[in-house]
Image 1 (tube, rainbow, N blue to C red):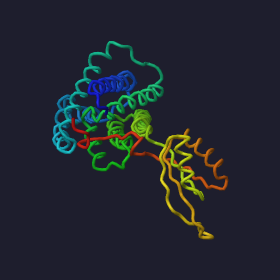
Image 2 (image 1 turned 30 degrees about the vertical axis):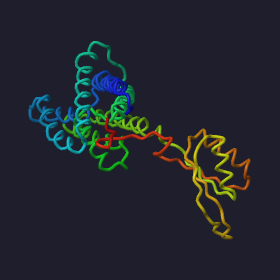
Image 3 (image 1 turned 90 degrees about the horizontal axis):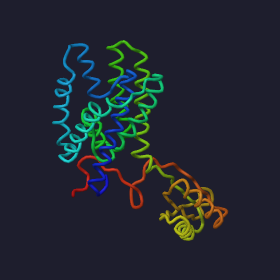
Length: 289
């Protein structure tokens, strides 16, 4: 989320439209199984003749009641707003636009990417489109170490498999898995990939000089740890610096020029939080204002 409410609202609306586009114009048009509460409603309708709209309401009530307290009033209101916008785009706007009627596999691939972009835009505003999203967001709040895309894919997997069993369409299961795997990958990449950076671990004899060179060349802070060589027990400085891939290349050049005998370890950091890096906040931990 940003501090600008109008920008947040615009991004929510854009995310709802893009997500609805992936669902309606690709997944539904190609008869790829829909995940979430809508998918569960389709199963209940097929097995018991329960209207999908009624089942959606009945299934959402306990979810909303449980997650309202955990995620907070602000998240709940934003999610209701997104649910309304998503329904508006799906029921009134997209039916007036052409849908993709080509290859079913391409529809699953394109639908997964488009849905992932839309859902990530919504989640990044600390919102959701309701249903299973409430559950996955609640799990993420209680277990922040779990990748968000993996949670959404796990929830989708259960519904897709159930759809395939009930409707006896093996191809639909495969296409549904492809669609939702791509969607979850895009969600992870958009929500946390921009914070996925590199970590340089530099073993050198002159840590202060290395830190000064890093600050001068790439304008990044660094930390010096005291270490010892395992063989001769010689004292060494271990410099840690979180940076981008491009900055890592510049750091490697300047360190090798400064200390040719230095030892540099380059690590991939899945997520970095702190000064100079964007932080994603979910649920009640959002900033009040």
